Image 1 (cartoon, rainbow, N blue to C red):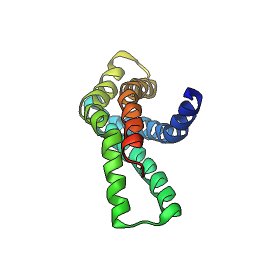
Image 2 (cartoon, rainbow, N blue to C red):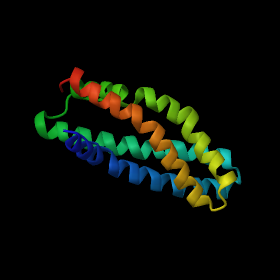
Image 3 (tube, rainbow, N blue to C red):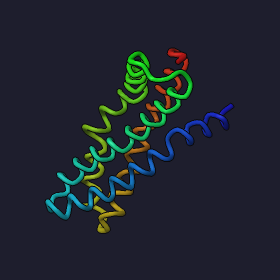
Image 4 (cartoon, rainbow, N blue to C red):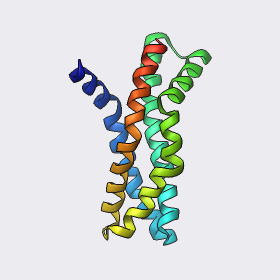
Length: 145
C-alpha cells in the first residue's frame, strides 16, 4: 500500500517541485542581481515559486477533470476547495514565514548563491510537504470528487 502511495505522491508533486525550484533559483538570482538584497530576492522568489507550483498543479488537475466530465463553474469551485484543503494550512506557513526565511537566510551562510537557494528550497519543501500529504490524503477521503 505505501509503495503505491509514494508513487502517487511522486507523480503528483515531483514535476511541479522541480519546475518551481528551478524558477525560484533563476528568479532569486535575477532579483538578487537587480536589488542586491537577499531578503527582497528571497520573498520575490517565494512568490514566483508559488505561481509556478500552483499553476502546474491546477493545470494538471483541471485537465483531468475536463477529460472526465468537462469544466463547469461547480468544477472550478470544487477545484478551489480541494486546493485550499490540500495546501492551505501548509501554504500559510510556507509563503509567509518558512520559505522566505530559508531563501533569504541560506545565502548568508552558503557562499554559492544558486546553491544556497536550492538548499533553501529543499528545506522549505520538507517542512511544506509533511502537512500537505496528510491533508491530501484526508481530502481524498472526505471529498470523493
